[in-house]
Amino acid sequence: MQIRTMSWKILLALLFVAVGCRREKGDRTGMASTEELGRLYARQEVNYESGVFLKPGSQLDGSYPTELMPLIIQQARPGHVTPELGVLGSADADRWEVDTGRPVIYAGRSDASIRGQIHEQLVYVWVYASGGVANRERPSLVQGLRMTINDAGYPFVWEVLGDPFPHMIFVSTELEAAAATEFGQPLPGRRFSIEHDFVERRDVAVVRLLADAPVPMGPFVYLQAATGDVDTIICRCMASQVDDLFETVEYDLRPLDELWVEPISDRSPLRSVYGALVEGPRAQPTWLENSLRIPAGSPE
Image 1 (cartoon, rainbow, N blue to C red):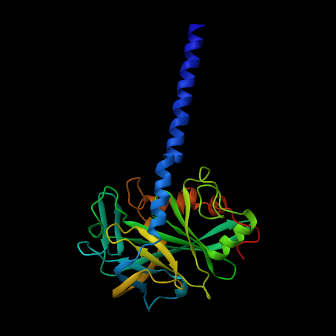
Image 2 (image 1 turned 30 degrees about the horizontal axis):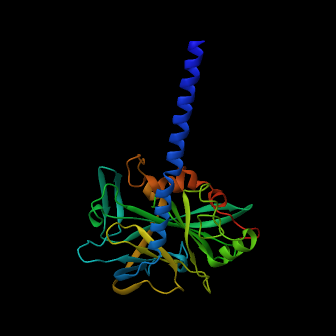
Image 3 (image 1 turned 90 degrees about the horizontal axis):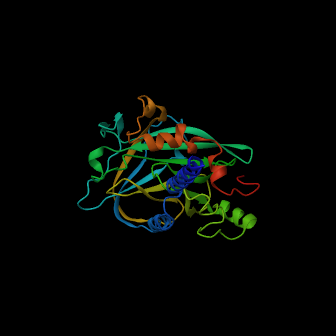
């Protein structure tokens, strides 16, 4: 009887630890997550004093529609080395090599399954030379963007691939309006009707609505000077959030698969983006459908 009693005590203790660990891993801490959301929302209001403008080169082969490619605003600040995009030579955590002789963005395609329909996704990833970002424990040496396209050729969801938690998502004004019509007001702790309950999907945050463009077009992506992190994304039809662009640089495209030639270790700076695009939960075609409250009849 004593042995059985001790077994139940041990079982309860282990159960308590397991539940506690799972909650901490999945939810982090309640207030910390709320504060993280606040910081993401604040980043949407940034305005850069100056920056470098990166746009698609004029000699691209037409494999990807130029009008949908991202236009990048790289913040420039006194005292900070402006991060430089380049061609990845080695992805090893201890031997990160990037040739910055020519700015490059790696491009690929994937599919999203939303309400039984398959939608094309355009994926853009870029890598930084390690000397161009602040000396942090985990500098953002890799960033990326995934755009989901509706049947008319317009992007309607934009996902930031490089931020680990919570995942930053931007949606079109039209999609949010449809979600508000079907689901009503945003749920507690959320800003938009398209979002699930905060406790249920603490790993996802819709941080901003993008205005509906008159024609299909790619976004402006604003990148921090010190870290290379994505601050915000806006439609080309929205008001600029940079005062002065003192340099314009053209970038080339290379196949996204070139980034995965070498095995991706857990310590590689590519790990987060690789997980989002190849083997993690975000790589699943139904991830968006499960992460957002997509209204009926959308996207069209």
